[in-house]
Length: 377
Image (cartoon, rainbow, N blue to C red):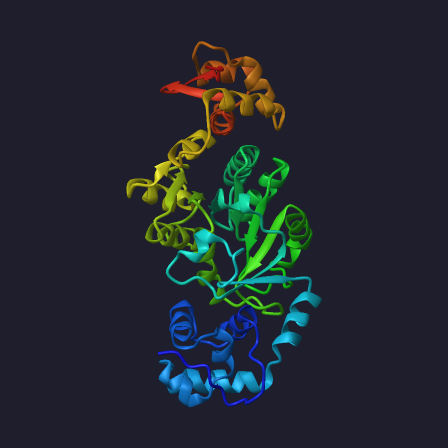
């Protein structure tokens, strides 16, 4: 049934995207109820001005009708748009053509997506990279390097701006000259943690800050589990680098699986509880990742062995340990103990550094404790 009458008489209905913006601010109205209103009214703007009786006929219960009518009395939609833009933000609604298509297709996309920066069509080729806030140097190094390599392949890196793995992922993508998106559990003008304000500014220049919460919204604990579905919803897949068994990163990976996204995980020390979640994901079928090629192959994105070698050649040693090991690696496999003697370094340092070099595509493990230099194929 269609109905275009409204109690406002000559009052002009707002344009559809403004009505959608207003409806998104009514707690309890999501994509399903929006679609119900669209089926009932000729124009969604009429729903914003409808009487309680009409809203009841359209299928809204008393609680939701009361919230909508109360908000409508207080909210001027044009002024709300001015407020959003005054805080340096823009917005897209589920009715806009520019709304990210991958996100539109999840079960509960936000009616309004706020952002600072720029969203580009190329961001559809994106990977979520998440992990623990209490990352070790190994986790930060791996996350940063993988993000950098993904960025060099034109993949947008998405994370949550938190300490630890998230921050390493954003910085790695920026270092790789690529784009990165940060999904927040607050308004896009409220940076949390505050120490990441500079990083947030860099992300705005090379990507965007994104949130389903209106500008001015403070970070609350309940917001962060919900924002995880957006990280995965915007992505082709989720890569978890270092995460305990119970963590937000594992929640994100589980949501990704439910959304039909690919799930990837980086292995770590089996004695380190910080990697226990990654190992469980791998046991449950997540793709084990030792380099960016594993991800691109699984996602069927453009990738060749020559490109892999080219990425490796572009990466310079990050420190003296890496430089010494690279100089000692040869085409023929060399045992870790022999490398330790040759480089005059502790075996533990050699092993951990070789793992980083392997993830960066600069070294290959060719047998138990045996490594060689990566060679172009």
